[in-house]
Image (tube, rainbow, N blue to C red; front, side):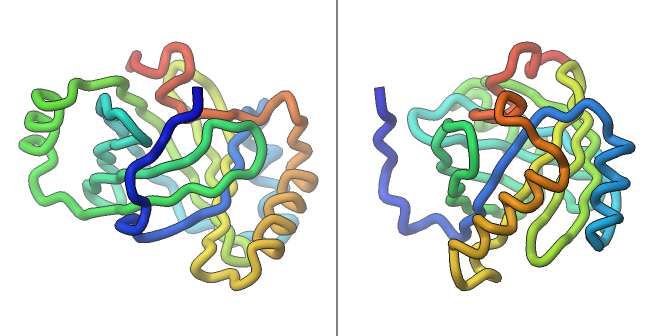
Length: 183
């Protein structure tokens, strides 16, 4: 059954994304450095996903970036896909978590260490997700790359450079993967 999303005009940004499981984070770091990507740093993130009828709603706590409420729409299809999102800073994450949990229910909690790299307006995330393993995610900033075909070419090139096999590509989010709600 296809999900029908509410009006998307309120969503503030768009990324073209690809996420895949990887076996060797050190090799991925070597690839990122070899293609000229610039390492931005490493952060601890905890994402709490709430039960909503369309899209996804999560409260993210980041060791580097503070807390944000992130609402996003993205098809659950393997391969490159467009994610439309809105990201709001949160001053009281504990209070907001309590309200959202009471109103909607908590669907999953995902804890990860994320290493962030930049390459030609594409973020490269090297993620170690608790209870799930290692992943790479590419996010092409569609507000910075005028031609969506160029964004797709960049994502495809990164997939090739990192040796991403089609069976390693993840269709959904970490929240839907088995064990994602375990810390």
